Each structure stands twice: as structure tokens, then as C-alpha cells.
Length: 299
Image 1 (tube, rainbow, N blue to C red):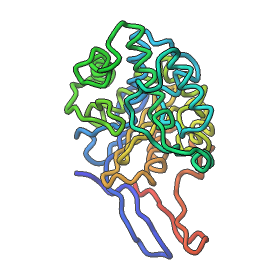
Image 2: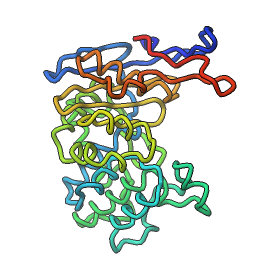
Image 3: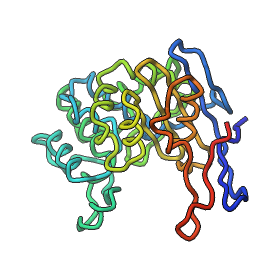
Image 4: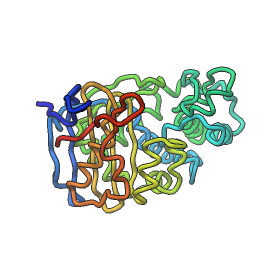
């Protein structure tokens, strides 16, 4: 059954509870943390992006450095992100991007852009990488999001190979791309395989393109060099170290506010030092602008 992972306190009163599951794997592959229904399938949402980027790389997309990091990330729509996505498209028109128009997540940028656009959408790096892969392999670009497309079939095979299990369900993510369901255990196992790839190297080397200024995934990677962190919608998070520790989190109510604290707590339980990111082990709860409680992990 799902377990209690975190509680929200306000002025000494437990106001809300977050239930879900978390699994942590040791470098040996053995489970060091198993809380909740870790073998039930989940939709990884944007935690799928590093595997999609790896498939694009395998298909011949010219992805290196920041371009590979943004392909695996959920950028915040800053100007540097837009410039990189545009370069990644090359001669392809931006209209080929099939992610929906969106406002940038970066607040400063949002205040000055006139309207939502596809290139500002947090998944545009992934979509540009998919188009680049299609061009490199000679695959159709107009239908690149269809589950039957050769690229999406390659993504599915990549996920199954790294996770060691068959896809449990195929759904459509918020950006329009297929997302493949697998167990939380399988997701963590896939992350163990990913840390030995160029995708993880790019994410570690350029965390500002995995998220953006102040983004929690970027901050965690900056404070814990060598760690890969990637969150997804509906309360999913994965963390992995170069040594092979891997953590996967799913919060059932879909609220992501506790996922980083839960993931780091599980990573610490595996014996990895997370103290440089210690301030992310809980989330303050405010009242009148003052701290009156916290979101705290109860693993």
C-alpha cells in the first residue's frame, strides 16, 4: 500500500499529509529503501526526458553539452534556453514544434514576453531534439509524436532496456509526447543505467539547462555535483549519483512540494552525503510572511 511520506505542519498543527512511494537502490542494484507500492506502475512524466534524450542521441541527433542537457530537461523559458532550442532546430521552422504554446516558467522572463509561444514551453528542448533525431535518421517530422513513429518506438525500447521491464501503459504527456508507464523500481533501475551515459554527463555539466535560474532540480545538482535530478508532473522525481545510487519518488496527490525533500532523505538513507543541499530537506510553511511550520519528511 502507499505510505505516508511527508506531513505539513502549521503552528504545531498537522494540516496536510502526502502519501506515496519511494524506492532507493544501492550501486549494487539492491534495494536500500523501499516504502509504499514501489512495484506498482507510475507515469514518469518529465522524468522520462533523459531517456527520450538518450533515444534521440542513439538516432543520430547532434546533441552535445548544453543542447543535450536541455533535451533531457524542463527548462524555465529564459532567453538562453530559447536561443539554444532555436539553434538546435537549425534550418527547421519553429512551427514544426508540436509542444503547446506556453508562458515561460521563469517569472522575470514572463513579465516581459508578450505572449505564450511553443519555444518557451518547458518541453521545447526535448521536442527540438526529437525533430533533430528525425532529420538525422530520415524519419517523418510531421508525425514525430505518434506512438507508432520510429523515434517513439526507439524511446520505448530504450526505457524497457534500461528499466529491465516491459512498459505497463502508454499515455500522452502534457506536451503531447508519449509517456511510458513502468514501476517505481524500474524507473530507479533505469536511472542507474542512465548515469553512465553522455546524457547524464550533460545534465551534470550544465544543470542550468535542465531547469533554470532557481529551479529546484538545477539547485540540487549545483549543490551536489555529480548528482542527476529530474522532476516530473504529478509528484514524480528521480535522483541518481555517479556511483550508482538511484532514487525514484511518486507522491499520490500529485503535489511536488515535498518530492525533493523525500528524494534527498532517501538518498541520505543509502549512505550518500546530501548535507550540501541540506536546506532542501524540508520546505518552510509561511504565515504572515513568517515561518510557522514546515513540510517535513516522515520516512
